[in-house]
Length: 167
Length: 254
Image 1 (tube, one colour):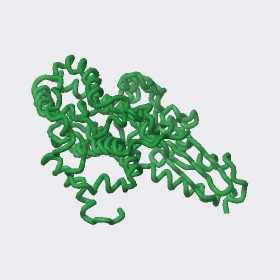
Image 2 (image 1 turned 30 degrees about the vertical axis):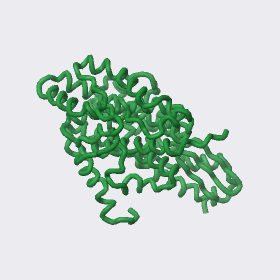
Image 3 (image 1 turned 60 degrees about the vertical axis):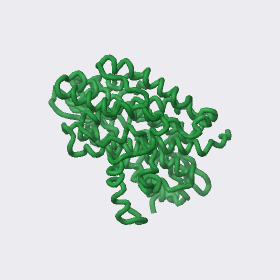
Image 4 (image 1 turned 180 degrees about the horizontal axis):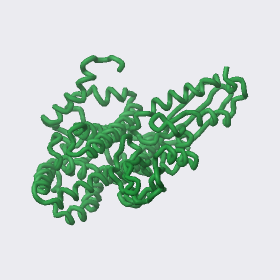
């Protein structure tokens, strides 16, 4: 039996467990690193977790829900894991630790979101290359292998790289 | 805080029209997967399609909750004549110019509609809209970039774009087809203004870009009251495609 099952269940323990749930599409970061966890509510007999979807049509949502349920199953409480939109997830919610992990894995973390500004200006601004650090980079396509990623090319080290879209 | 009961009939019509719009344009976009003009556009159109089908799923989810119906049944089990998407989306996939013209006209209109729903009084919808607008910004950027490229490209690119705009223009304004009992939505604070006013805002929004590119402003819809009815052969073909797997084994859990 894991240690968590015999410890008192509190919010801190639940958040710690959630920090071990990897994002299915970019497994170097957890759902806590990405800022998906909006609310954790621990009652005597139940644990409620409110998560925010990164994209409305993200195909990984059910995978994330079942991974969370599996991990929190160790606490032996009734689980209520739900996705809500009442707070829009934005890439500004990615934590500093999450940004470091993304960069180390070759993903440029997103710049700050400016909702009123034209998105092509924001995306078109050179992103520092996660491989060599150069800002001599160009946007290749706003659409990448998943909904949340764009593709860039570094003219200094001549490597392609992906960046998290500011949304 | 208690939320007043929404006007169910009008809200249902609104959600159905939006969900069907996103569903149909999503499936049309997905037809480009594997055959787009360049690799980046294969990825882009697939990503746009995925976004739109995701938006449709969320909207069918709200509609299903409101009516007590299964969202999948709403999406897949209706006969073609029961869909309420706008006729702008009824022209078949067409060529690349047609796809870009349709996306530009639809995305610009959808943006005006979403703006009129943002901050509305029914939280399930206004919360979702707060998320949708962040994603749709990328769709508009894509459509505007390609519209400019084709319009300024001259030669065959511009010729095909003008043919596409002419083909779609009489149905362009059908996104703003008045909905049954829509006044109730405005009274309830769910929708900021009625459809004729939203159409006026849309024309003001796209006017400068069209003038700059030397493209025609679409005329008013010829049969404004039938803008979400009378879907023709191209939609019946698309319906046959997107329901084919579902119809192959009715009732089975996939």
